[in-house]
Length: 201
Image 1: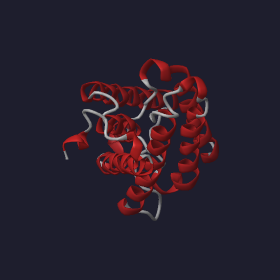
Image 2: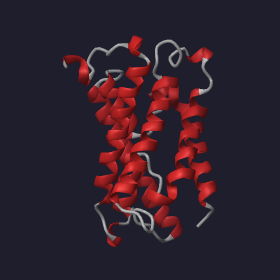
Image 3: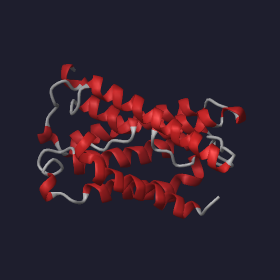
Image 4: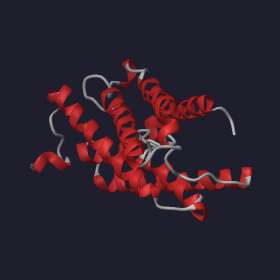
């Protein structure tokens, strides 16, 4: 019921704080699109990323049902008024791409992101990618940019209709893979890490 502007800011701030607080523990993914891309990149083992994604979706469901209990209502996952799956899918792809591209370039690159002692901007950069997406596209798709969020909202509001999460998740994962391809284009010196999906191609 609050302002959409402050909703985007509060979500981004919570993500930024969580990244700074827990990044050293788990890598601070908190998003299956990020974990999927890290597995694709070969940065992390697929079995670990699978467990990460399962926990992320479970946590999203807990959050969504907690919201339903506190506010005694749910809201459905659907494109904004006047928009369809093409528009919603496009912005979910673009801003998931932006978020994952920020992660790759500030937190997962050899020469900069992994030198954490000299890198204190990664959390801010990732958080502001959510602000940008929330402001620009929240009214078009709802501004998920995270498969765990899409699944959680859709499942928790199943009585109002369910199924849009499949479309959202597909486009968000596409955005993550495109971010990886763009990352490899602008940082070819990174190479393809051992175990990457692309290493055998």
